[in-house]
Length: 385
Image 1 (tube, rainbow, N blue to C red):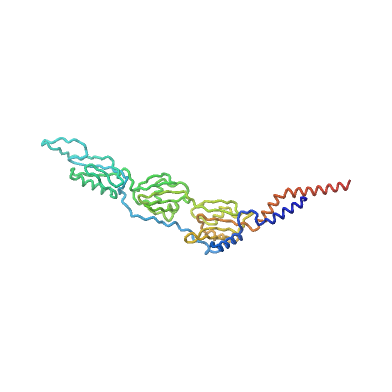
Image 2 (cartoon, rainbow, N blue to C red):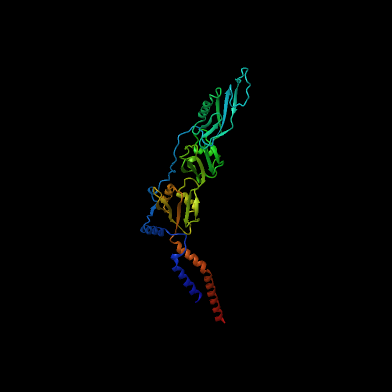
């Protein structure tokens, strides 16, 4: 078999295999056919041409706030873990000063009119909400304010000392505090000074967050409930006035919004949102648009689980050769986990085949040309001889 015969035999073989030639994904017609086949198999997938405002779904509303809103509490409420410093002021006969009073001429105990102040060793509130006070015993303090506990101790000492006065200072506050953690400048325990601090206030008081707000999520644990909010909605959005409550645990998590890019484009990857709210036009621009050599601008698709419950598989079709599509795509809000697909051009397969044939058989064609040239040149020389 000569070189020409070999070349054309292999060319015909490749032309026969054109339909199975590798590509970056299906064409528009192949996607529509596969959707129809899925419906026959029982999987209901809807294709929605984005050609009017009615085809543009509404933007996703912020996550609904589901934690219970608690009533405002006193800022000096005492609870387990708090450390209390108790000072007793006494006049006359002293219980706590430790001074030895000289006996009077009548042989009784002397009376000292000066006021003596005695600070007791710090008392930590135990898990059951009690503290121990000398001459008083176990005092229940959980759920009481500082003023209420002061009066409770004063009444217990009234019959033992001359008009005692009690002053309590909280050296360590556990009950009226929150915990902040995660992507925060100063994680740890933070005391609520007014009990009117918002969630954003707490983040600011803890030194602010690390990273970009649109890539972060605030997780709030309150009692047995847990909720997550996009940090942008907490700092400057609809939830900027939500209040923090004692006992809250706030954790800032790094969870950027993402969308995937597939098909005939310059890049195939998962990409993060550049800001909290993005549109399909911005996503197409980030992805680089359809590839000049392989993509079909009439076949740009967005795959998403839509519907009220986010369970309805839906394919939105954008025809970038029609001018109104660009305006509609500017109104079309991108969502987390969307898949943006750029379809292959129908002419892409033959073009790839021609390129492959050229690469594979270029040396053969060159060799054939040289052989023909050699034969022609050689024949002429023989005739001359």
